[in-house]
Every structure is written in structure tokens, then in C-alpha cells.
Image (cartoon, rainbow, N blue to C red; front, top):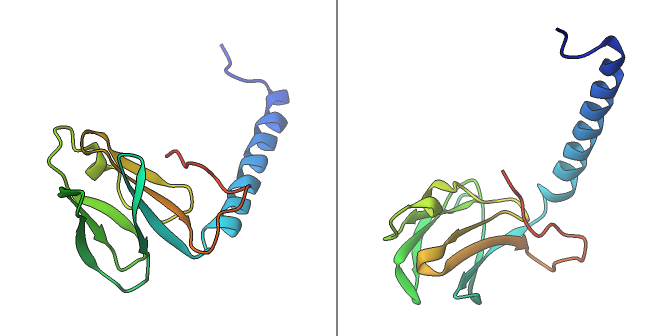
Length: 129
């Protein structure tokens, strides 16, 4: 039993080429834009953090002191500590690209990466890994 025929190869190659083109467009469009991290507590914006290169620090928001964030030298942000049971927020990793987000639902805290200057109508709402 064969999984695919010779006539399937152009279709697979076409799908791969389109995928690579879209990935390249995404990298050119969004990876080099200046970004900030918008931190929300209970769906309200409480802090906007600049994601500067060569800056490393830990901080908390006053609304939820049990959640600790970390800014990394590569211009990314992540959850460092949380008192929630599942720790999914900590395992979400570093965020640094427009549209990426992470949330600590038990603590009602979320982080979303947005453009620094202004969001455009065509910006991504979310990035799924």
C-alpha cells in the first residue's frame, strides 16, 4: 500500500512553498518591529513594559504580587513565578513577537505583546505555537 502517488508530489511541494512564503512574510513584517508587553489584570490594562535589549530584571504588578515577571536581555518577557497550581503560565515560555500572549488564569493576569507605537487593523491578534 502506497501513501502517495507521484502526482501528489507537486501538490505537496506547492503547499510547502506557500507555507515558506507565508513564514518569510511573517518574519519580515513582525519580528523586527518595536514591541511592548501589555499586562492585564482582570481584563484591565495595568502596565505597559518596554522590551528593551540588554535589560534584565524581575518585577511584579501591585494588583497581583504573587505573580513575578522577568524581562530578558534578548528583549523578551516571561512569567517567572506564580502561586497557581498548574504553572501553565510559567511553561508558556518567553514572549517577544507581536501577537504572542500568555495568561495565568487563576490569578487573572495576562500578557500580550503589541506594537510599541500603534496597533494597526491588520496586526495579528494571537500567535499559536
